[in-house]
Length: 245
Image 1 (cartoon, rainbow, N blue to C red):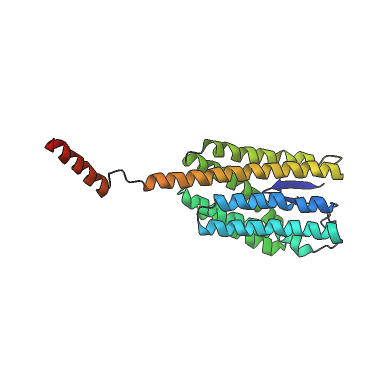
Image 2: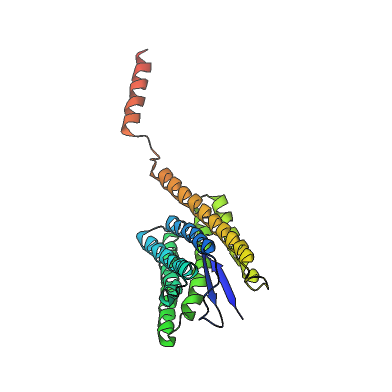
């Protein structure tokens, strides 16, 4: 049975036969870079620190590796397994860094994330399998969207907070489609790819709105609650002029 989960602009799969590359057209493979880029931009904008931006870069690199693997297979019939294998480890590592960064910005405890990441890495090494990183990456991506919702609401972006769950639901809606009888047809794949691109566009818009809300709130906090020395001098000058009259 083929189990596919699409998230963060990247299609990832856990098939019974992992040796069979996907049958995609060149156009479909090229378009796969679009949701990957949208997701990457969203992760970068959502990252509250250098640690989070490093995580976003790792996640983007994982998605780019997967898209490149698809393009090489579709355009030249090349199968480069290590490019495909990079997706989940990079997503898991990057997702961990971004999630920790968001936890710290929200003043939440991040130690459980670090411990879970270390256990997953150890399990993947012992089993010599990407399956543990696949599970961790899937959970991390969903959790990052939840953290994005909290961050957006905290800084006053109601629309951003509403769009993050929409992006999650749009991604989840793709799961049953992957098991459809016509899922192997090129037309059906274009439908799925379009929905995936739309989901990542929603995620990116939510991240943009959150980024703007965070910057606006920081600007408001930087505004002094008391008049500046120039304002005080101007007020004193006006009072003096009024008394003279």
